[in-house]
Image 1 (cartoon, one colour):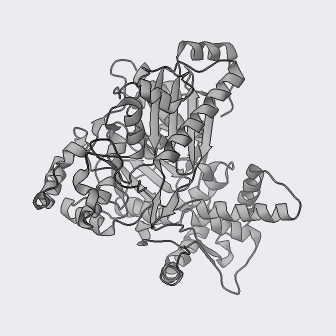
Image 2 (image 1 turned 135 degrees about the vertical axis):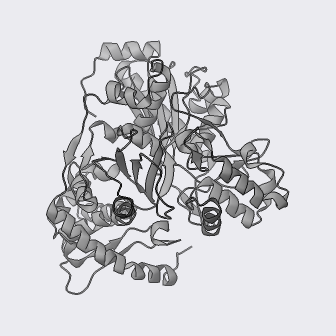
Image 3 (image 1 turned 180 degrees about the vertical axis):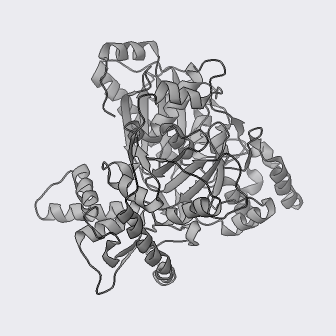
Length: 540
């Protein structure tokens, strides 16, 4: 986000601690953003990391978590020193965000019982199906409660030792503050939430307790889940131990207040000002998901739609797809390798821009080319595993433009299936979607194609490029600076986004028709993906 910076005022903000720090642990990057009194970023830092497939489970080690957090924070602190000749010691407030869902469990001594099972795993189909039927509420495979119940069904040895179950953001927040809490938006991906009082759903909690009553587990579900806080609530303070965990140099002072930890879905809503009813956003990175804030609950349960909440507890329909840009990124890396082999060095942003803009030159339906971006399983289309695929017929129009367009279309295919349920079966009206994430970094391209794919205007704010780390920084600032009875919706609209409505692109008819034609082949071709999963085994 390019803004004019008054360096003197920024220095004063840093020295007096009138700042807010947001850190988000994303799928491929841990990003830190420091914002000033005007809510604009004044420094940032990042650390690249990757999940690992170990024993059939996608995971990150705790060592990688802390190495990455420290690296990201260190890079931010170094930027503060370089830009403003200041050592970062005081921060007004801090917020931690991370990938939602998964499975992190600890015993009474705080020892991790099994490796972190991330949202990307599709290993809980049996548990998710049973819980969905019992609760009459869609429980996706990636939710914490699905992972917990699957471990119970598997009779895993660690079950009776569980003292605390949390998310990645909840874990980091706990270690920094000692507080075992989550923001309500993050908690809504752990266990269903009752939006009337922002608590775990009591009826479903009782149903779960009945399901495990004969197992003598030694714990009740409510006792091992994190407490729930709302946006604006105090989430604890940075302890001496927590300060050294984040900043081993010892420069960062303890005692800094933290807001409730939130998931990437919630921070995406905040970063796009999509927390009020009838607003929506689509986040497109390693995964892709659309969030539509509802006026009321849906009329029935849909396996393709998750019901979560905003950071203030409003009901949200979420269409979540495990796969988005991983396959696209892989192809662009190969293009880069080819250029390097030919003696040409092209920087990554320029390479992405070239491929993206080339896609706009392609035939509206990709000339008969078909791509599947399934690096991992995709529950919406019924896949527990994925195989990235590119297929064509001998008479397809095979060109770079069509190939690039098919790769971009593949990032939106599964999302379209879920969104059609909301718009066609539930008559949910979406006036505009706010886009954010890597798919929208090349100006106008992903935005235009997404508008055509979903047949809805798509806007991208200049600020949205800062992503979830900025979103959680805003939540930290809101906790610290809000006036009495000031809602999050009002705070964001009046104090953060008053001058940033975003550049909006209307759907083009040729893009809409082209994507519809592509989707017919996409749905019919899922049998090809099924055959690949069954017959092409993963090496190693």
